[in-house]
Image 1 (cartoon, helix red, strand yellow):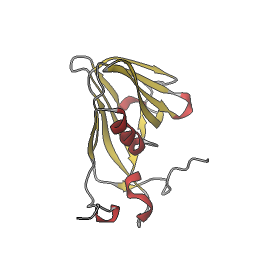
Image 2 (cartoon, helix red, strand yellow):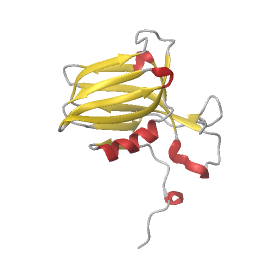
Image 3 (cartoon, rainbow, N blue to C red):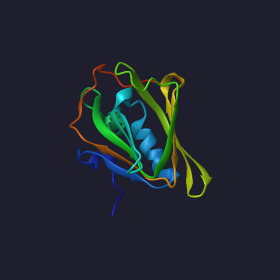
Length: 155
């Protein structure tokens, strides 16, 4: 038996979950540079679910990318959310487009803690959760990124 190789993967929508910080670091990497209008955030207090409809860059294509860079619409969902706070965000402005830099978890009183979504431009969203439970699921087919370029982060 040999290890799986990236080249052997089939093109399929992502549907991943995170129950610990290691899992969340994978979701964070895949959601990095995702963009979304501020109006595409929803917190349902009854179900205690916070969701974002994001247009994420398909980082999983890696260096073997043969076509133009792609994005895909995805749902980034957090369960067990008891409170939501934000800073530096105009939540009701449909023209405000936000970009995710990272998603992290800070344990406060195990298993409870805060999920912190750090956004470009000094914005942030903090979710108080009773336990970490997140998912990232692609909900559309990939499309060519409007910029036709991959996001770039100077080192």
